[in-house]
Length: 182
Image (cartoon, rainbow, N blue to C red; front, top):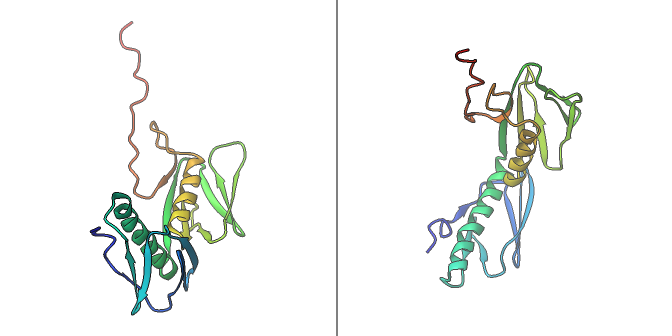
């Protein structure tokens, strides 16, 4: 039996779950999320706990069991506490600022890059404009938006300039060696 799949999902206060067939809707203080589970997986709500069961021990059912449980646990955590990703901006003149709900990035190009916040996502730029914090209730969407921001100017290996995740290690290369011997 799947070690992850068999673990029950504790529901915190203020989180409501609606199960209709294979569709699971989870609502909490940070928002609403919906997931269509595989039709073979059975999701039950018993005494404030979500339980995922599988019909057989076939390989694909075992894989779906753990996956379904993990996705539902991420949804419960997202609507109750939310997810954040922190990005650091490194480079002379590189910075970020907010204009309403739109993130404006100055990353050394001839023009600023406008990044509107999609539904369910909010940005925060603390003082200095060297950090961007992405908030949201959907773990997948928060990670995708953070990756799109990083993709605008990934860190380069010579000077380390660019947008990186907080705590990300950027492997540095030596530059050109001077001319030896003449």
